[in-house]
Amino acid sequence: MDMQPIPARSGNHNMENYKETYENFKWDDVKGNFTWNQTGKVNIAYEAVDRHAENPDKKNQPALIYSAPDREETLTFEDLKLKSNQFANVLKKHHIEKGDRVFLFMPRSPEFYAAFLGILKVGAIAGPLFEAFMEQAVRDRLEDSEATMLITTPDLLDRVPTDELPDLKQIVLVGGDAPGNYISYDEEMEQASDEFNIEWVDLEDGMLLHYTSGSTGKPKGVYHVHNAMIQHYQTGKWVLDLKEDDVYWCTADPGWVTGTSYGIFAPWLNGVTNVVRGGRFSPDDWYGTIAEKNISVWYSAPTAFRKLLSAGEEEAKKHDLSSLRHILSVGEPLNPEVVTWGLSAFDLRIHDTWWMTETGGMLICNYPAMDMRPGSMGKPFPGIEAAIVDNEGNELPPNQMGNLAIKEGWPSMMRAVWQNPGKYESYFLNGWYVSGDSAYKDEDGYFWFQGRLDDVINTSGERVGPFEVESKLIEHEAVAEAGVIGKPDPERGEIIKAFVTLRDGYEQSDELLEDIRQFVKKGLSAHAAPREIEIKDTIPKTRSGKIMRRLLKSWELGLPTGDTSTLEE
Ligand code: WTA
Image (cartoon, rainbow, N blue to C red; front, side, top):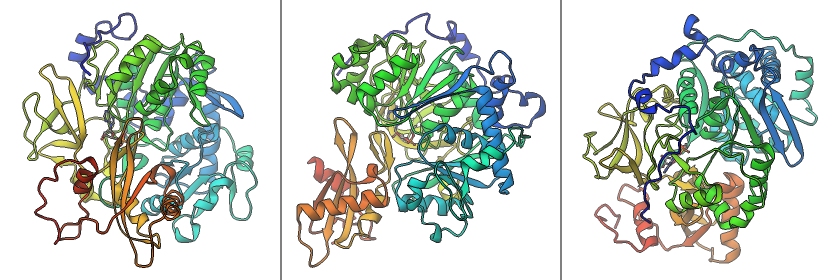
């Protein structure tokens, strides 16, 4: 679909003079907005919450509006400061120190946010895990990070294989009773003081580990530091276009990077009221949330927009959505069809943004003040140098497809892959961070996403590594070998398709396929379970034994199979 550019709308953003502002922009200029400008010592939790709680004009402003079908709760900046202080004291009491890894495995709730901030306040490293993870996914992450404490709920506890995790010394249970050696969140919070001396750290000290998938190996721990606040703050201001009286809603779970960078830090660093909606997605629920909470800025994902689109415009018209001022998208390609739908359903543009877990913050975006080309991810944020490079790291001219790469050295860049320096090094080429996405740049500097260059699957905006799914599949008693690919899907972007061979004595049947599917679902997570499984006689492999997923994909899509010279006999 070819669409005309959609011009910027005036009066809608912070930067009427954005061109000059952008051209003279330096990351260093942002530092003046923070208190550490004077001391050099810092804590992102202080900048996000306590700073506003100390401001008489802001302390009673709602910071968190938590809303779920069975619970409504509002915490002001002051409330959030005190609750996170209390939790920091609980952590201190149990000897958690700077640099320790403390993981959170629980649904979104006010307790989650208080605990998350408390972890940062003692200088420890927070590791939020998506609540849908099953046993193996939980084990892999706790094992690799050598987390010493986990905060979870009684419901999720049976997915935590404590006897296989020697480093995990303490478990805090939120809600319900805490038997035996468990620490009760409710009891300890009640006793804890709400005064706390924040652990001041260096900008380069760690604060966050997000596990994410690549095409090989287990998920890797992407390590972020306090310095990332510079980017969270400034992209929040210029791309999310946050103003102090906004009511902002980011729909992502904090188990994924969007749910921390833009579901916690960007809004609070900018002193903005942040809505968190629990429960399950439904068009009625989401439109209802916008209407009821008077959401003005909304950050979501193409999969959700596509579901809303298929629910029909009448569904949207049932609700008063007039509070909306600015809409953004991330995680997958934003189809021009969805942009067109957005214009008619909300009378607003949907602004695409591109970035990754590793980049910690937005890099290529459509700003409110910029003319938008539907289908394009936009242009690099000021201070970001992006290019399309070849496999040697040389820049390619406009309109040529290649590796989307970013010049090293932006504030929110990951600082390490946990326990894996080789993996970290492998991202860099000739001074460029190479993203693994293929794209091209047009003559006017707009970037256009083309696909992944590796085998990473993007299903409903969630990143899944084929290796993880394959490893789980072959643990099933009937499965001999497995190869997993992403298959294009109109609503989910991609779905996971598995090709498997069966062990002797097993016959194909619907029950068996369903059993295999459930096995992955119960072992890893629902979003990693293959929606389609096809039985094969053999799985194509290279002579060195690597599964040729590229070939599986070509078969699936009926495409030419290309170079198969490395195929095993
Ligand atoms: C994909 C999510 C097209 C891309 C913040 C990237 C996108 C991966 C876009 C990172 C976009 C993200 N258009 N594709 N606007 N944004 N992606 O680490 O393939 O979960 O490499 O971070 O999602 O996914 P991750």
